[in-house]
Image (cartoon, rainbow, N blue to C red):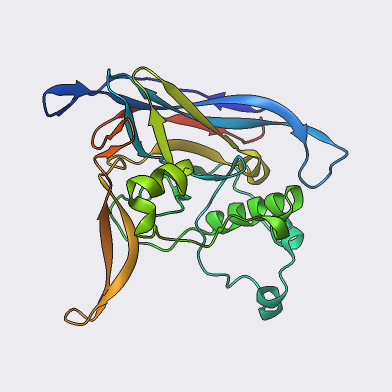
Length: 275
């Protein structure tokens, strides 16, 4: 058995004008294979891919901006739909190993993996069938639940969940998070800080995708580098609904200037189907 990577990496620069100078940021995707342990059999080794997201500051100005993706110690975060596939006892006493093994087989199916897409505190990935039309509202595909369950099991199995001080349930930024002091001290890991010409890379373990099989095209959502983030919504009595609050990011944080707008990127397709 062998795995095939269909790899396309085309990096180009889009110039974005801001005041009296031009700035250029690229966010590139790449992959490599690594040897490790089978997630269900620690006595068995497997080869699995790692996805790298590389941020490049191609300008002569120090820049900062929100990351397009966050992770749990190198594992991607996946949005989930409802848990209708589980009986009530699974809500009360979840069996994470059972959930991880209770996944579908997505062989010979093509999907898009959308990275980024919102200015929230926790940025997860969304997997869509490649036949899905853009701009159409839909329920989150079951494949998202399967992957989320697999990575939840890995995380809880590999890390001491009970002593983890990170709040993985926090959905929105707080007002104090988006001050200059908050960004530099409280939520620094949610942002990229690049001096002129610098490069920074985050890496994500894709073993969950290998387990469920299928063909996945990874891409970064356009227009993700915004000049604001979302804080908790408030109730609007006039409209009778919650309104999301857009909290502007500081123009200057330390020696770094806020970057928003266009960036160059690429896509990468990884085929996990058996050959």
